[in-house]
Image: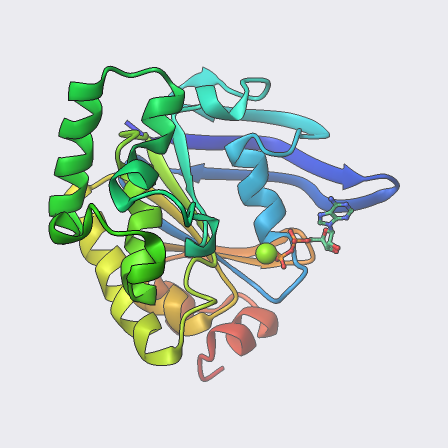
Length: 238
Ligand code: ADP
Ligand code: MG
């Protein structure tokens, strides 16, 4: 499960309305990319869905249930932070198990979930190492592992690759797409990088100053951009 609907969700910081009322449906299992220029509200929208920010109005539903006032840890979603959010003094195993340990899950179940996640992410041989002994790509996989073990209804990524060099970024992009193929769990992925959006998304949401300019598949946006902003941003020949 992992269907998320936003109904007239809006957000202001003080007097400034960053997200005017916005409607959006994300289907179970979809890979949705929020794309748009810096400062257009991508992170804010993701943080509203995650529950890390309170909405100023409107309703968020997850699998049909009103989640608008549900605290982040109870929404059943997992935010994937950049790899620098790892604990340097803990082993890879302990880093991945961290949210389960915090939830008080029994040790055998923790180990089972960590071993499963490590297998999916090719980290089995690295579980006893510290993050400092890993490559940038491996560290990013540990950060993803920490989300996988929670068995979330959806994964939320906020520019997870922006700290990696160009070559590594291409590799990780493929890895995240493959992970989606394997898990078939809803993923919402924020980026300002048009290439990431066009290559990874089932559905792209183009944002501009907190508003949705267009929602569609990469092909639809490329072939039929609704306006010049979308055309310019996606790089289609309108
Ligand atoms: P993006 O992720 O697309 O770069 P953000 O969602 O981070 O954009 O920011 C959207 C707008 O909201 C920006 O103008 C930013 O300055 C503003 N903003 C974000 N968070 C806060 C905050 N906590 N307080 C005040 N303004 C904020
Ligand atoms: Mg951002």
